[in-house]
Image 1 (cartoon, rainbow, N blue to C red):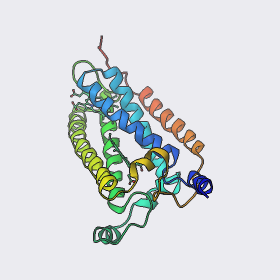
Image 2 (image 1 turned 30 degrees about the horizontal axis):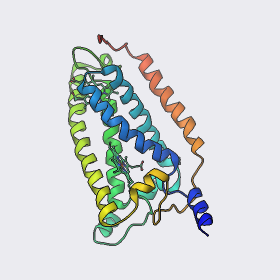
Image 3 (image 1 turned 90 degrees about the vertical axis):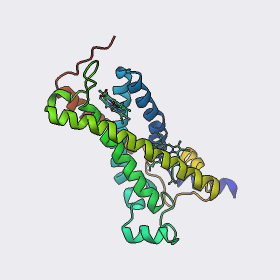
Image 4 (image 1 turned 90 degrees about the horizontal axis):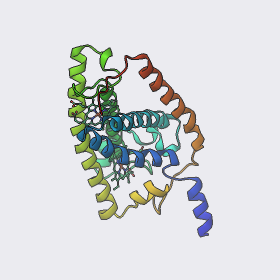
Length: 226
Ligand code: HEM
Ligand code: HEM
């Protein structure tokens, strides 16, 4: 019985492998990007930033072609349903609840804005992003502001995210963290089989190649680090 339900759970994870790898990679890379900017280690910072950009763009595509609970259609709901949820009406999806779904969308959008603005950013001394010399001075300074403001917004939202996860985990006793690590947990099982994880490979390759082509077209970044 156990092994049968274990098997079913394995085949129908709440979070498929790409979604979990995406999540825990972001958890490692965001502090790395922060630390490396703080230490002016821009050779590290740019690679953390490029990797985050590729991961986030791929996550957006995975939100369309990924497994059921990773898809945006599974967890993004309209205002009426969100209101019903807030009034205690329960969630439609096994995955992100209506509020969680929109906060995930906001997190992904902020991460994207942060990484894209970095491409146009410069510290005016040691390092310029690869698209810095493509932009006029208005865009350059706007992107500098975006890079700083969005990061503070990200920090606030991540703080809220971790508090919300802890609330559901500790107070409501929902095994959210286990599910984000192993794919499923009691009470946190998926309703449909996962799509093949290999579907992610062409997405990663295309997104990385697109970014590489874009950077290759641009004037070379000026890097004076030593
Ligand atoms: C850098 C910090 C973090 C960021 C940027 C972040 C971002 C995200 C994002 C974007 C998702 C949605 C996953 C998806 O559908 O692709 C998510 C979900 C989740 N995160 Fe995080 N996360 C962070 C830290 C953490 C930490 C430290 C924990 C554990 C305590 C955690 C636990 C979870 C859980 C359990 C979910 C699933 C929530 C649910 O069931 O609706 N996250 N996170
Ligand atoms: C999601 C990815 C990224 C995160 C979380 C991030 C985070 C940060 C943070 C916290 C700072 C210091 C605050 C500031 O001065 O604005 C910073 C500065 C900077 N970042 Fe990023 N960054 C990311 C992506 C990138 C990328 C892809 C590039 C370019 C390849 C880049 C280039 C820069 C530059 C040039 C600065 C210095 C700005 C200055 O001193 O005014 N960043 N970044």
